[in-house]
Image (tube, helix red, strand yellow):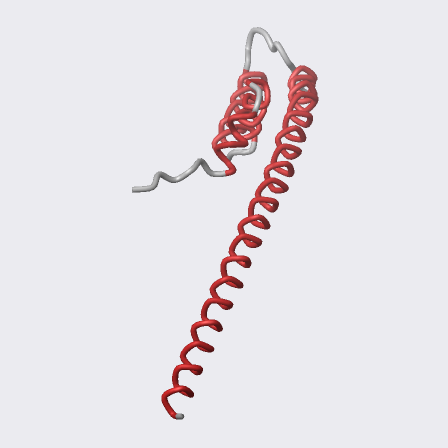
Length: 133
């Protein structure tokens, strides 16, 4: 039984560096609903604790420290997401090339089958004509 070769996606994944894999992982986490829900929860807790604190407000309204944390997060998140998008574009190009190569191979096989069928049809017609004579 013939074993299947690795897919283009598996081959591409094996060429990624550890930092590229990490960037893809982080981008996947940042772009998930669970991250948005978790971050929203942290923000609500942060605001609630700072608004209701009786003794010490570590970040009083208008929450300058919270805004600074958002800025830092955005400064790192945007480039990581763009790196992941660039790799997605690269994966798309590789997939398109692999699809094209598969289509070219299939086209050649179909053309060969058409030639074989035409040859068989011609041979049968020749045989029929011989028998009719």
